[in-house]
Image 1 (cartoon, rainbow, N blue to C red):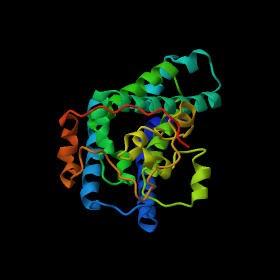
Image 2: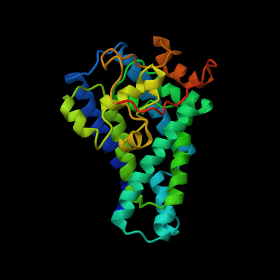
Image 3: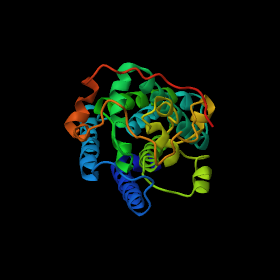
Image 4: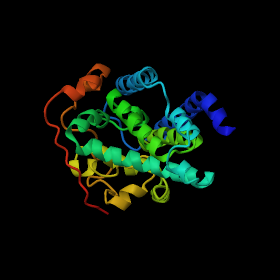
Length: 280
């Protein structure tokens, strides 16, 4: 019953969650910013929100089947490991959330390790500031590839449709949360990052320094970075002095939507080795 309702109303659920979290984090950034912005907010938001809208439209056209719809289809045919072994629904729900998050973590690693994939992903890192809109700044080709990876995991796993929708809503919400330019007490951050990736944890991943950029790959859960040795506690220069972005694209012109779309086809410097050393 609940899965049927979610399939029918998933658009409203997604948009409602997006609007609420975006408004909350944007207000928090104004009330208690972590860093001073170096670029015009209007310029950055025009590009970042513009590509978010473009990605949504292209996905609707090119991949009309949603991840929730794919999960419903797989479950209806009794496919996937969770269906083959008749895993109880509560356990299947939790396993699905963990497995999908692990898949996103591993995918993120690959987008840093493989040069052609880094060309796509570096557009996300080329934002010269770090705020709530950075969490939605991804190249359309990366978004499409990510969706195909998600489909593959769903076919293999056979998760409940409700779990997939919850995961996508959480992924979207935590991406806005952990990319936000917000200040919170150190003690609160220390406790929160046991359960979720915090802004101070993920901001390190957007450092211009390669060793820092190739750490803290998690989006939802922080456990994978600690488990696989990619966790970094803090940037060497401190959060206020750390330089955000990548070295190749550092002009205001590079923040325009047209330049963001063309970025994978510009320059030849795409080497970006992963740093697996754990730094505490």
